[in-house]
Image (cartoon, rainbow over all chains, first blue to last red):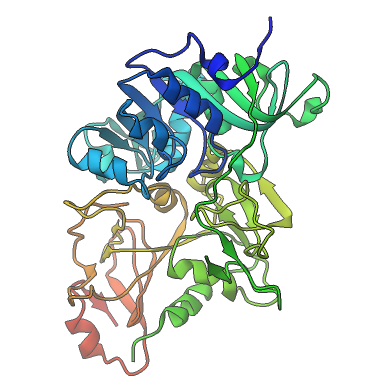
Length: 244
Length: 212
Protein backbone atom coordinates (compact mmCIF):
# COMPACT_ATOMS: atom_id res chain seq x y z
CA UNK A 1 0.00 0.00 0.00
CA UNK A 2 1.39 3.35 -1.03
CA UNK A 3 0.80 6.25 1.39
CA UNK A 4 2.80 8.79 -0.62
CA UNK A 5 0.92 11.29 -2.80
CA UNK A 6 2.42 13.59 -5.39
CA UNK A 7 0.83 16.82 -4.16
CA UNK A 8 -1.59 18.18 -1.57
CA UNK A 9 -4.59 18.26 -3.92
CA UNK A 10 -4.15 14.59 -4.81
CA UNK A 11 -3.59 13.78 -1.13
CA UNK A 12 -7.07 15.09 -0.25
CA UNK A 13 -8.80 13.62 -3.30
CA UNK A 14 -11.95 11.70 -2.33
CA UNK A 15 -11.62 12.63 1.35
CA UNK A 16 -13.61 15.87 1.57
CA UNK A 17 -17.35 16.43 1.67
CA UNK A 18 -19.78 19.11 2.85
CA UNK A 19 -20.57 19.21 6.56
CA UNK A 20 -17.53 17.22 7.63
CA UNK A 21 -15.34 17.83 10.69
CA UNK A 22 -11.73 18.70 9.91
CA UNK A 23 -9.03 18.93 12.57
CA UNK A 24 -5.81 20.76 11.70
CA UNK A 25 -2.55 21.00 13.63
CA UNK A 26 -0.70 24.20 14.42
CA UNK A 27 -0.40 26.85 17.10
CA UNK A 28 -0.89 30.28 15.61
CA UNK A 29 0.91 29.91 12.28
CA UNK A 30 3.56 27.56 13.66
CA UNK A 31 3.41 23.96 12.49
CA UNK A 32 0.42 24.58 10.23
CA UNK A 33 -0.28 22.17 7.34
CA UNK A 34 -0.30 25.09 4.95
CA UNK A 35 -0.39 23.17 1.68
CA UNK A 36 -3.15 20.80 2.82
CA UNK A 37 -5.20 23.80 3.95
CA UNK A 38 -4.91 25.30 0.46
CA UNK A 39 -6.04 21.95 -0.94
CA UNK A 40 -8.98 21.94 1.49
CA UNK A 41 -9.92 25.38 0.21
CA UNK A 42 -9.66 24.19 -3.40
CA UNK A 43 -11.84 21.17 -2.61
CA UNK A 44 -14.71 23.61 -2.06
CA UNK A 45 -16.20 21.48 0.75
CA UNK A 46 -18.64 23.66 2.69
CA UNK A 47 -20.37 23.72 6.07
CA UNK A 48 -17.20 22.51 7.74
CA UNK A 49 -16.64 22.16 11.45
CA UNK A 50 -13.01 23.02 12.05
CA UNK A 51 -11.04 21.87 15.11
CA UNK A 52 -7.73 23.45 16.06
CA UNK A 53 -6.11 25.80 18.52
CA UNK A 54 -6.62 28.79 16.18
CA UNK A 55 -8.33 29.44 12.86
CA UNK A 56 -5.32 31.01 11.16
CA UNK A 57 -4.82 34.76 11.17
CA UNK A 58 -5.52 37.43 8.57
CA UNK A 59 -4.42 36.06 5.19
CA UNK A 60 -2.80 32.86 6.50
CA UNK A 61 -3.57 29.25 7.44
CA UNK A 62 -7.17 28.22 8.05
CA UNK A 63 -8.19 31.85 7.42
CA UNK A 64 -8.08 30.95 3.68
CA UNK A 65 -10.85 28.36 4.16
CA UNK A 66 -12.77 30.74 6.40
CA UNK A 67 -12.56 33.59 3.89
CA UNK A 68 -13.85 31.20 1.22
CA UNK A 69 -17.09 30.75 3.23
CA UNK A 70 -16.49 27.05 3.89
CA UNK A 71 -16.67 27.05 7.70
CA UNK A 72 -19.87 26.77 9.77
CA UNK A 73 -18.46 25.99 13.20
CA UNK A 74 -15.14 26.32 14.98
CA UNK A 75 -13.75 24.51 18.03
CA UNK A 76 -10.72 26.50 19.19
CA UNK A 77 -9.06 28.03 22.23
CA UNK A 78 -7.95 31.38 20.81
CA UNK A 79 -9.14 33.19 17.69
CA UNK A 80 -7.51 36.64 17.88
CA UNK A 81 -5.92 38.45 14.94
CA UNK A 82 -8.66 37.23 12.59
CA UNK A 83 -10.99 39.99 11.42
CA UNK A 84 -13.23 37.89 9.18
CA UNK A 85 -13.85 35.38 11.94
CA UNK A 86 -14.64 38.24 14.31
CA UNK A 87 -17.22 39.69 11.89
CA UNK A 88 -18.86 36.35 11.15
CA UNK A 89 -18.97 35.35 14.79
CA UNK A 90 -20.51 38.65 15.87
CA UNK A 91 -23.08 38.44 13.03
CA UNK A 92 -23.96 34.86 13.98
CA UNK A 93 -22.83 33.34 10.66
CA UNK A 94 -20.24 31.18 12.40
CA UNK A 95 -20.55 29.32 15.68
CA UNK A 96 -17.47 29.20 17.90
CA UNK A 97 -17.10 26.75 20.75
CA UNK A 98 -14.32 28.10 22.96
CA UNK A 99 -12.28 25.42 24.70
CA UNK A 100 -9.55 25.95 27.26
CA UNK A 101 -6.33 25.11 25.40
CA UNK A 102 -5.42 22.15 27.60
CA UNK A 103 -8.96 20.82 27.51
CA UNK A 104 -8.94 21.04 23.72
CA UNK A 105 -5.59 19.25 23.53
CA UNK A 106 -6.82 16.51 25.86
CA UNK A 107 -10.21 16.16 24.08
CA UNK A 108 -8.33 15.54 20.84
CA UNK A 109 -5.90 13.14 22.52
CA UNK A 110 -8.82 11.28 24.15
CA UNK A 111 -10.74 11.07 20.87
CA UNK A 112 -7.73 9.52 19.18
CA UNK A 113 -7.17 7.10 22.06
CA UNK A 114 -10.75 5.79 22.16
CA UNK A 115 -11.67 7.61 25.37
CA UNK A 116 -15.19 9.08 25.04
CA UNK A 117 -14.93 11.45 28.02
CA UNK A 118 -12.75 12.48 30.94
CA UNK A 119 -12.87 14.78 33.98
CA UNK A 120 -10.76 17.91 34.38
CA UNK A 121 -10.58 20.63 37.03
CA UNK A 122 -10.16 23.20 34.24
CA UNK A 123 -13.18 25.45 33.86
CA UNK A 124 -15.02 24.36 36.99
CA UNK A 125 -17.22 27.22 38.18
CA UNK A 126 -16.96 29.04 34.83
CA UNK A 127 -19.08 29.34 31.67
CA UNK A 128 -17.11 26.46 30.19
CA UNK A 129 -18.72 24.05 32.68
CA UNK A 130 -22.30 25.17 31.96
CA UNK A 131 -24.49 22.26 30.90
CA UNK A 132 -21.73 19.73 31.57
CA UNK A 133 -21.64 16.98 34.15
CA UNK A 134 -19.55 17.83 37.22
CA UNK A 135 -18.29 15.35 39.76
CA UNK A 136 -16.23 15.36 42.91
CA UNK A 137 -13.07 13.27 43.27
CA UNK A 138 -11.03 13.40 46.50
CA UNK A 139 -12.81 16.55 47.59
CA UNK A 140 -12.18 18.48 44.35
CA UNK A 141 -14.75 19.32 41.68
CA UNK A 142 -14.17 18.30 38.07
CA UNK A 143 -15.94 18.91 34.76
CA UNK A 144 -16.65 16.14 32.26
CA UNK A 145 -15.31 16.84 28.78
CA UNK A 146 -15.78 14.63 25.74
CA UNK A 147 -13.24 13.26 23.28
CA UNK A 148 -13.12 14.67 19.75
CA UNK A 149 -12.97 12.52 16.63
CA UNK A 150 -12.59 14.23 13.25
CA UNK A 151 -13.62 12.95 9.82
CA UNK A 152 -10.32 14.24 8.50
CA UNK A 153 -7.11 15.31 10.25
CA UNK A 154 -4.46 17.46 8.60
CA UNK A 155 -1.02 17.65 10.19
CA UNK A 156 2.35 19.19 9.46
CA UNK A 157 5.61 17.46 10.38
CA UNK A 158 9.26 18.25 9.69
CA UNK A 159 10.24 14.85 8.34
CA UNK A 160 8.30 11.74 7.48
CA UNK A 161 9.05 8.40 5.92
CA UNK A 162 7.09 6.47 3.31
CA UNK A 163 5.43 4.42 6.10
CA UNK A 164 3.96 7.62 7.56
CA UNK A 165 6.24 7.83 10.60
CA UNK A 166 6.62 11.50 11.56
CA UNK A 167 9.11 13.75 13.36
CA UNK A 168 8.20 17.32 14.30
CA UNK A 169 10.55 20.24 14.76
CA UNK A 170 10.72 22.45 17.90
CA UNK A 171 7.44 24.16 18.86
CA UNK A 172 5.92 23.29 15.47
CA UNK A 173 4.93 20.04 17.18
CA UNK A 174 2.16 21.63 19.32
CA UNK A 175 -1.26 20.09 18.48
CA UNK A 176 -0.04 17.97 15.55
CA UNK A 177 0.67 14.68 17.40
CA UNK A 178 -2.82 14.48 18.94
CA UNK A 179 -4.56 15.65 15.80
CA UNK A 180 -2.77 12.93 13.85
CA UNK A 181 -4.52 10.39 16.11
CA UNK A 182 -8.07 11.81 16.17
CA UNK A 183 -8.83 11.62 12.43
CA UNK A 184 -10.83 8.83 10.83
CA UNK A 185 -8.44 9.64 8.00
CA UNK A 186 -5.19 11.53 8.61
CA UNK A 187 -3.11 13.26 5.97
CA UNK A 188 0.37 14.54 6.83
CA UNK A 189 2.51 17.03 4.96
CA UNK A 190 6.25 17.05 5.57
CA UNK A 191 9.20 19.19 4.54
CA UNK A 192 11.31 16.15 3.83
CA UNK A 193 10.29 12.60 2.91
CA UNK A 194 12.80 9.84 3.67
CA UNK A 195 13.01 6.06 3.45
CA UNK A 196 12.02 3.85 6.41
CA UNK A 197 14.88 3.58 8.90
CA UNK A 198 16.28 7.01 8.24
CA UNK A 199 14.32 8.72 11.04
CA UNK A 200 15.64 6.40 13.75
CA UNK A 201 13.01 4.10 15.25
CA UNK A 202 13.57 5.48 18.78
CA UNK A 203 13.06 9.08 17.62
CA UNK A 204 9.67 8.87 15.92
CA UNK A 205 7.03 11.21 17.41
CA UNK A 206 3.97 9.93 15.50
CA UNK A 207 4.01 6.26 14.47
CA UNK A 208 2.88 5.63 10.91
CA UNK A 209 -0.26 3.75 11.97
CA UNK A 210 -1.92 7.14 12.48
CA UNK A 211 -1.04 8.47 9.03
CA UNK A 212 -3.00 7.33 5.96
CA UNK A 213 -1.51 9.64 3.37
CA UNK A 214 1.67 11.70 3.23
CA UNK A 215 2.82 14.44 0.91
CA UNK A 216 5.91 16.64 0.63
CA UNK A 217 5.17 20.37 0.76
CA UNK A 218 7.33 22.72 -1.26
CA UNK A 219 8.24 26.37 -0.78
CA UNK A 220 7.06 26.74 2.80
CA UNK A 221 6.08 30.29 3.71
CA UNK A 222 6.19 29.74 7.52
CA UNK A 223 4.82 33.18 8.26
CA UNK A 224 5.93 34.62 11.62
CA UNK A 225 3.15 36.36 13.58
CA UNK A 226 5.32 38.27 16.06
CA UNK A 227 8.92 38.71 15.06
CA UNK A 228 10.78 39.53 18.27
CA UNK A 229 14.56 39.99 18.41
CA UNK A 230 17.28 41.26 20.72
CA UNK A 231 20.12 43.64 19.86
CA UNK A 232 23.48 42.10 19.01
CA UNK A 233 25.55 44.57 21.01
CA UNK A 234 25.16 42.81 24.34
CA UNK A 235 23.26 39.73 25.39
CA UNK A 236 19.81 40.63 26.60
CA UNK A 237 18.05 38.47 29.15
CA UNK A 238 15.07 36.26 28.31
CA UNK A 239 12.15 38.10 26.75
CA UNK A 240 14.17 41.31 26.41
CA UNK A 241 14.39 43.09 23.08
CA UNK A 242 11.67 44.44 20.90
CA UNK A 243 8.80 43.45 18.72
CA UNK A 244 9.16 44.65 15.14
CA UNK B 1 3.29 56.75 44.48
CA UNK B 2 2.03 53.78 42.53
CA UNK B 3 4.47 51.11 41.39
CA UNK B 4 5.49 51.07 37.72
CA UNK B 5 5.05 48.02 35.49
CA UNK B 6 8.72 47.17 36.06
CA UNK B 7 8.36 47.46 39.84
CA UNK B 8 5.29 45.20 39.76
CA UNK B 9 7.25 42.66 37.73
CA UNK B 10 10.14 42.90 40.20
CA UNK B 11 7.75 42.20 43.07
CA UNK B 12 6.37 39.20 41.17
CA UNK B 13 9.94 37.96 40.60
CA UNK B 14 10.33 37.74 44.39
CA UNK B 15 7.89 34.80 44.25
CA UNK B 16 10.42 32.74 42.24
CA UNK B 17 12.34 29.99 44.04
CA UNK B 18 15.39 28.00 43.02
CA UNK B 19 14.44 24.97 40.94
CA UNK B 20 10.95 26.22 40.06
CA UNK B 21 9.27 25.44 36.75
CA UNK B 22 7.27 28.58 35.96
CA UNK B 23 4.71 29.71 33.40
CA UNK B 24 4.54 33.43 32.65
CA UNK B 25 1.54 35.10 31.03
CA UNK B 26 1.54 37.90 28.48
CA UNK B 27 2.14 41.54 29.50
CA UNK B 28 3.76 42.49 32.82
CA UNK B 29 4.35 38.80 33.75
CA UNK B 30 6.58 38.43 30.67
CA UNK B 31 8.92 41.05 32.18
CA UNK B 32 9.59 38.66 35.09
CA UNK B 33 11.75 36.60 32.71
CA UNK B 34 14.30 39.44 32.79
CA UNK B 35 14.37 39.51 36.58
CA UNK B 36 15.36 35.99 37.60
CA UNK B 37 17.89 36.48 40.42
CA UNK B 38 21.51 35.65 39.69
CA UNK B 39 22.37 32.08 40.68
CA UNK B 40 18.74 30.96 40.83
CA UNK B 41 17.70 28.26 38.41
CA UNK B 42 14.20 28.87 37.09
CA UNK B 43 12.89 26.97 34.05
CA UNK B 44 10.28 28.79 31.97
CA UNK B 45 7.52 26.76 30.37
CA UNK B 46 5.71 27.80 27.22
CA UNK B 47 2.36 26.04 27.06
CA UNK B 48 2.42 25.41 23.31
CA UNK B 49 5.05 22.76 24.12
CA UNK B 50 8.45 23.81 25.45
CA UNK B 51 10.42 23.80 28.68
CA UNK B 52 13.49 25.98 29.01
CA UNK B 53 12.69 29.14 27.06
CA UNK B 54 15.66 31.21 26.02
CA UNK B 55 15.86 34.90 25.08
CA UNK B 56 14.62 36.48 21.86
CA UNK B 57 16.82 35.59 18.86
CA UNK B 58 19.30 37.96 17.26
CA UNK B 59 17.90 39.69 14.20
CA UNK B 60 18.20 37.39 11.22
CA UNK B 61 18.19 34.26 13.39
CA UNK B 62 14.42 34.03 13.93
CA UNK B 63 13.02 30.53 13.48
CA UNK B 64 9.33 30.25 12.52
CA UNK B 65 9.26 26.81 14.17
CA UNK B 66 10.31 28.25 17.53
CA UNK B 67 7.76 30.51 19.20
CA UNK B 68 6.36 31.03 22.68
CA UNK B 69 2.71 31.02 23.77
CA UNK B 70 2.50 34.70 22.84
CA UNK B 71 3.59 33.68 19.29
CA UNK B 72 6.85 35.64 19.67
CA UNK B 73 10.04 34.23 18.18
CA UNK B 74 12.36 32.91 20.92
CA UNK B 75 15.44 30.68 21.27
CA UNK B 76 16.26 27.39 22.97
CA UNK B 77 18.76 26.62 25.73
CA UNK B 78 20.93 23.53 26.23
CA UNK B 79 18.37 22.10 28.68
CA UNK B 80 15.36 22.83 26.44
CA UNK B 81 12.85 20.10 25.67
CA UNK B 82 9.92 20.11 23.24
CA UNK B 83 6.68 18.16 23.53
CA UNK B 84 3.07 18.17 22.38
CA UNK B 85 0.47 20.58 23.74
CA UNK B 86 -1.23 17.56 25.38
CA UNK B 87 1.95 16.74 27.32
CA UNK B 88 2.37 20.44 28.07
CA UNK B 89 -1.05 20.73 29.66
CA UNK B 90 -0.45 17.42 31.40
CA UNK B 91 2.40 19.22 33.18
CA UNK B 92 0.12 22.13 33.98
CA UNK B 93 -3.00 20.20 34.96
CA UNK B 94 -0.94 17.59 36.80
CA UNK B 95 0.52 20.21 39.14
CA UNK B 96 4.11 19.84 37.90
CA UNK B 97 4.51 23.56 37.16
CA UNK B 98 5.07 25.25 40.51
CA UNK B 99 4.13 28.84 39.74
CA UNK B 100 1.93 30.70 37.28
CA UNK B 101 2.15 34.49 37.00
CA UNK B 102 -0.54 36.05 34.86
CA UNK B 103 -2.55 39.20 34.24
CA UNK B 104 -6.11 39.86 35.33
CA UNK B 105 -9.17 41.99 34.68
CA UNK B 106 -10.81 41.30 38.07
CA UNK B 107 -9.90 39.32 41.19
CA UNK B 108 -12.30 38.55 44.04
CA UNK B 109 -11.48 38.43 47.75
CA UNK B 110 -11.92 34.65 47.68
CA UNK B 111 -9.49 34.18 44.78
CA UNK B 112 -11.81 34.09 41.78
CA UNK B 113 -10.14 35.38 38.62
CA UNK B 114 -11.70 36.96 35.52
CA UNK B 115 -9.30 37.67 32.66
CA UNK B 116 -10.66 36.25 29.41
CA UNK B 117 -13.78 37.99 28.20
CA UNK B 118 -15.94 41.08 28.43
CA UNK B 119 -19.58 40.42 27.47
CA UNK B 120 -20.60 42.32 24.34
CA UNK B 121 -17.04 42.64 23.09
CA UNK B 122 -15.28 40.30 20.67
CA UNK B 123 -14.20 37.17 22.50
CA UNK B 124 -10.75 35.98 21.49
CA UNK B 125 -10.77 32.91 23.68
CA UNK B 126 -9.21 31.85 26.95
CA UNK B 127 -6.16 30.10 25.50
CA UNK B 128 -4.41 28.25 28.32
CA UNK B 129 -5.42 30.56 31.18
CA UNK B 130 -8.21 28.34 32.56
CA UNK B 131 -5.92 25.29 32.59
CA UNK B 132 -3.09 27.21 34.25
CA UNK B 133 -5.18 28.57 37.13
CA UNK B 134 -6.92 25.21 37.63
CA UNK B 135 -3.73 23.16 37.63
CA UNK B 136 -0.84 25.22 38.97
CA UNK B 137 -0.59 25.07 42.79
CA UNK B 138 0.50 28.70 43.21
CA UNK B 139 -1.09 31.44 41.10
CA UNK B 140 0.06 35.07 41.20
CA UNK B 141 -1.98 37.75 39.43
CA UNK B 142 -0.39 41.06 38.40
CA UNK B 143 -2.77 43.84 37.37
CA UNK B 144 -3.58 47.53 37.80
CA UNK B 145 -5.50 48.23 40.97
CA UNK B 146 -8.26 50.14 39.18
CA UNK B 147 -9.74 50.40 35.71
CA UNK B 148 -8.91 53.54 33.73
CA UNK B 149 -12.29 54.97 34.80
CA UNK B 150 -11.42 54.26 38.43
CA UNK B 151 -13.61 51.19 39.05
CA UNK B 152 -12.19 48.67 41.52
CA UNK B 153 -10.71 45.48 40.03
CA UNK B 154 -10.11 43.79 43.39
CA UNK B 155 -13.69 43.06 44.36
CA UNK B 156 -16.07 41.14 46.61
CA UNK B 157 -17.16 39.15 43.54
CA UNK B 158 -16.09 39.33 39.92
CA UNK B 159 -18.75 40.81 37.61
CA UNK B 160 -17.01 39.48 34.49
CA UNK B 161 -17.16 35.79 33.45
CA UNK B 162 -14.68 33.77 35.46
CA UNK B 163 -11.45 32.16 34.32
CA UNK B 164 -11.31 30.17 37.54
CA UNK B 165 -13.09 29.99 40.87
CA UNK B 166 -10.93 30.16 44.01
CA UNK B 167 -7.63 30.02 42.13
CA UNK B 168 -5.57 33.12 43.08
CA UNK B 169 -3.02 33.03 45.94
CA UNK B 170 -1.32 36.40 45.58
CA UNK B 171 -2.42 39.66 43.97
CA UNK B 172 0.14 42.31 43.00
CA UNK B 173 -1.26 45.65 41.87
CA UNK B 174 0.35 49.05 41.31
CA UNK B 175 -0.81 50.00 44.82
CA UNK B 176 -0.15 46.94 46.94
CA UNK B 177 0.31 43.22 47.46
CA UNK B 178 -2.44 41.01 48.90
CA UNK B 179 -2.39 37.39 49.97
CA UNK B 180 -5.62 35.55 49.24
CA UNK B 181 -6.98 32.35 50.75
CA UNK B 182 -8.35 30.53 47.73
CA UNK B 183 -10.59 28.43 50.01
CA UNK B 184 -12.12 31.68 51.22
CA UNK B 185 -11.85 30.67 54.89
CA UNK B 186 -9.67 33.59 55.99
CA UNK B 187 -9.98 37.14 54.62
CA UNK B 188 -7.56 38.55 52.09
CA UNK B 189 -4.61 40.26 53.75
CA UNK B 190 -2.64 43.33 52.72
CA UNK B 191 1.06 42.40 52.72
CA UNK B 192 2.68 45.51 51.26
CA UNK B 193 1.72 49.01 50.15
CA UNK B 194 3.39 50.93 47.32
CA UNK B 195 5.45 53.82 48.72
CA UNK B 196 3.31 56.81 49.67
CA UNK B 197 0.03 54.92 49.34
CA UNK B 198 -2.01 55.16 52.53
CA UNK B 199 -4.28 52.48 53.93
CA UNK B 200 -7.21 54.88 53.53
CA UNK B 201 -6.45 55.40 49.85
CA UNK B 202 -6.15 51.65 49.31
CA UNK B 203 -9.44 51.00 51.05
CA UNK B 204 -11.23 53.69 49.06
CA UNK B 205 -9.94 52.24 45.81
CA UNK B 206 -10.73 48.60 46.67
CA UNK B 207 -14.10 46.87 46.79
CA UNK B 208 -12.78 43.63 48.30
CA UNK B 209 -12.55 43.31 52.05
CA UNK B 210 -9.04 42.77 53.37
CA UNK B 211 -7.21 42.85 56.68
CA UNK B 212 -3.94 44.72 57.16
